[in-house]
Image (cartoon, rainbow, N blue to C red; front, side, top):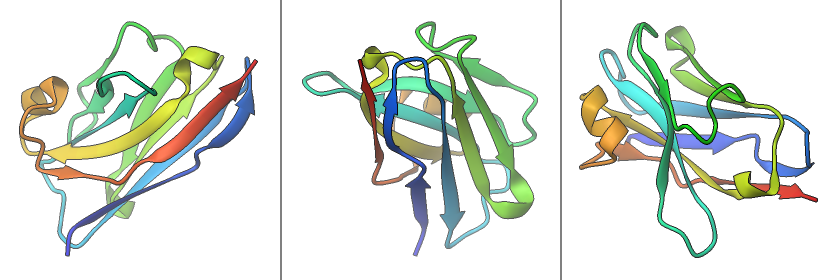
Length: 124
């Protein structure tokens, strides 16, 4: 059974940092792009950042650029999201995703695999 399991969410103060992890299991994710999405209360899910299989391509939403960094360790089947300078607008459930197509991952269309999410709350 394929699973993406997020961890690292929690409550943090404005200006603080958190690192999210997403551990993949159940199959090999060779050649899979991986990424992060988030959904804030009352809003649609949005793309946060993505990373290609060999980490040669990374993209971020404008709202998190220069504050968030995505990375992956293929030996551990794990992708990370380092978040800094957090603001209340970053409060959301963060989801890990994996897809064979980097473009599909960016668009959030027909994603192959999703995690169940981890909640990040930024208090002011």
